[in-house]
Length: 132
Image (cartoon, rainbow, N blue to C red):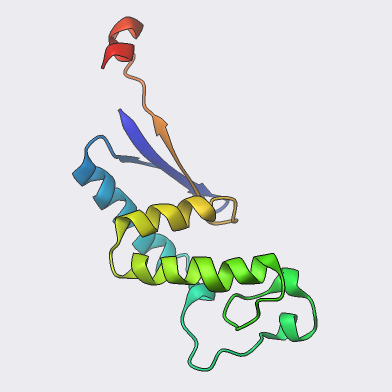
């Protein structure tokens, strides 16, 4: 059975059943809401009314870019401002494909450790699992 796994340093491993398209969509939506709401993982992607460079970018410390600015000087700033923010807005509207792409692109972030894996049923012989 296919599962979506999530954990972070302050939260134990959580597994979501994604064995059907409906369950997969529901799992990604639910996890996105948790990451966006409780963990505030995407606060750096919220729209700003008047985009201006953030303090780190003004100080030329682009590796600390908050993502809530207009800077496009480095690749990371460009990725945050041109790639992640549009995905976030689509995800916020319930677009599951955008949620999956956003989570996959940020899975190395501290609170965004998300991956898909298989859950093995030990009562099913290995030969049958391969065929299923």
